Each structure stands twice: as C-alpha cells, then as structure tokens.
Image (cartoon, rainbow, N blue to C red; front, side, top):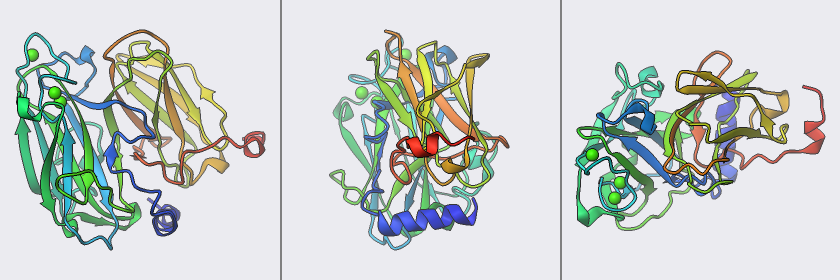
Length: 321
Ligand SMILES: [Ca+2]
Ligand SMILES: [Ca+2]
Ligand SMILES: [Ca+2]
C-alpha cells in the first residue's frame, strides 16, 4: 500500500471515525445475509471453493480496552445452516495476532496454502451440532488490542480470523461481530473489517442486491472481479463516482467467472460498489468472490466502505476516461 492510501485511512479514522464502524460482518451496507463456510467433504458445486475463510479486523492504535469476537449461529444444525443428509459437520474459528498475522503474503492469498496461519494463535474453538448455540451468539475473548499486528497502512492493529470447515459436508452459515463488550454487540469506534476473499450466501429474493466495496489505491487502472459458482444467478454491476452502472460480459473459466472493469483517475482513493444483482429464483446460492488489480494483486474490501458508499457523479462520469 502506498502513502496516499495511508493518509486517506488516517484522515478517515481521524475525521470520520464515527462513520467507520463496521464490526458486523456482513455489514448493513453489504446486504449479505450470511457468511458461508462448508466442511471439507462438501461438493464444490455447493459454492465453497476451499472450505476456508479469512477475515481481518483493524482496530485504531489508540484503542486499548479488551475486545471480543462474537459469532452468530456458530454451530452447524437447526436454523440458518445448510444441511446435506444429516448435520454431521464441525467448523473451527481461530483468532490470530502478532507479527505477520496480516503482513505475510500467504495470509492474503485467496488459497489457504503455505503459512496462511501466520502470526500468534490467540484463541480458537470448534463448533459442531449444539442446540444451545443455534440462532444465538457466542463470544470468544477477551483479546488485548495490543496483540494485533501493527499495520499503519491499514489504520491500526490487525487481527485475523480463520474459519475452517473440518469433518462433514454441511454449510455453516454465521455472522461475526467485533465488540467492545462480552455479552452484547457494541462497535469499536474507528474499527473496520476487511477481507481479500469472501464466501457468502446471496439473498434468496429475486431482484435483491448484495454489495462489496473494494478501495482503489493509486496506480490501479483496472479491476478483475472473480466469482466462484455464481450459477447464472444474476449480473455484476459496478457503481462508482465515475460509473453509473458498469455491466461487463461475464467470461467463464471452469466454475469461476470474471468481470473486468477499467478504473478512471477519478476513482482513485474512492471505493467501488460492486453489486451482485439477483435475477433468478434460485435458492441457497453460495458464492466466493475476490477482486484483483491489473497486476493480479488482491485488493481488500472493507465491510464499511472507505469514504462511504460511492455515488455516481454526473460531472465526473461524463469526462472521458
Ligand atoms: Ca444453526
Ligand atoms: Ca451432512
Ligand atoms: Ca451456523
């Protein structure tokens, strides 16, 4: 990340701190019902490419009080989850901090290979069928904010959450919340959640729109959106300060599809609004998404869009690219 990005983050944290509160994953702005991680005997066509999900949370350096990771519906059974024959699955949630937790390139790769569990393991818990936690919250922690990896480019200390499908073949649907208290969801001012790859459940409703918000730093001239197992469920549209609704032909590559979008100068240091618009009646569609720049480097998307949700500006939009 370059200095401009750092300056923007610090600026936003300093002046818009109260707006950058996005400890729920998925966030309200994303309009995504659940994160989804399958166990490792699941079929790929059910929508998870590797049965591992990694999220990051950034906490401002000035925040010194204990933090808690809360998980909604952490177990696999009863409500919300995707059953195949019987529920017989386990999911492991692990929290990492310390040196290399985020900065190790393997931690940011879309594939769980090499040292993706970099950093210090601060705590973990495995969930299976557990009626007492069905449709309910559980809390991991407390964690000391000092234990996150200091990443000035990202605006503070970064924690990593790795969610791994273990034995079984069912889909665990859940949500996360980074909280300042153990028994309730209280946002940490200036905190934000982000990921480089996101595996989630689309809404079942035809016409519904889910959103991801990648931030565009300097030198980015194009973005490539890659989606696993979209099943012809709809279209991908990009809205930004300069794009009213850019829809590109989707190219297929196995079960992955791609959508390429040029980036104009006006879009530098803003977020894009990548929309998944549902056009079919298909139910239970789980997809995996990652977004790279023209160099093939993955771009983080923030659950609370940096600089706010981008709004198309006619003045910017009519300028030639
Ligand atoms: Ca459940
Ligand atoms: Ca099963
Ligand atoms: Ca669940």
